[in-house]
Amino acid sequence: MSKYWRDALGHEGLVDAHVGCAGWSHVSGVAPAQQLDGSQLERYGSVLPAVEINSSFYRAHRKTTYEQWAASVPHAFRFSVKLPRTITHALRLAHADALLAQFKDETAGLGDKLGCVLVQLPPSLQLDLALANSFFEKMRSSFECMLACEARHATWFGDEASTMLKAHAITRVIADPCRGQPGPHEPTTLAMYMRLHGSPRMYYSSYSDAYLAKVIHDLAARAQQREAAWVIFDNSASGAALANALAVLAGLQSSHHP
Image 1 (cartoon, helix red, strand yellow):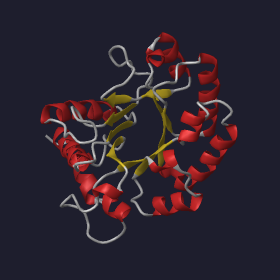
Image 2 (cartoon, one colour):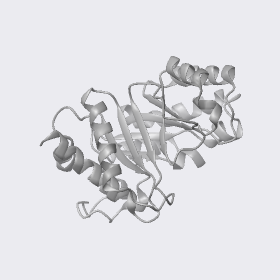
Image 3 (tube, one colour):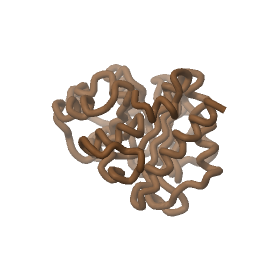
Image 4 (cartoon, one colour):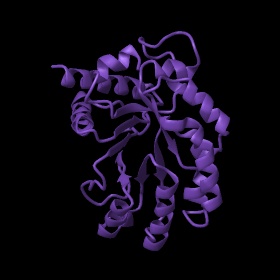
């Protein structure tokens, strides 16, 4: 664990706090604390303890690529990997066994640094309870890590969907701005996965100190209970993601070491 993480997360109590950005290439060179040598991922990994891989949504990566990424970061670093859109958007969760097996084999290259698999569903995908049950049963039997689902159709936020997600220990994503959710967020596991895209302008707007303070509180509460807690910033178009992530780490340090 790098000194920056050690200062921010402490030696105990917050090891399950995973703070990062959606991708790492667009943040290199922005943070003053970043080391100047090494790859972009190595520089990113010197200041943040987690990252969400979005490129896996668009194209497959070789197992050796995942192995290389895993070798580039500290031991405590964790990756969240987004499930391919061929499974979620093209096949819409049906008849995806072969592609799911391929994805499992590829991401095995991360070893124990695979912290989560993110399933982002298209806004038009309504809940088919039988199909969803079958799909997430296969997901749960394929991966031992945390699984998170970001649904974006209103039918995925009712009682049936919540019961199904709880049955398979799938963490419902807290997204900002949220799409499809008709009311207050109902958690489906004790873990937390937040995806923060920027508000009011998606991908551009930085979050206020007051908003980040609430994020820090929620993150620390779960991490101190040894529950996996992820906060991923995707407001990267103007460089706000890295600044917000570093602010959350600094806030965790203050809350853990008053």
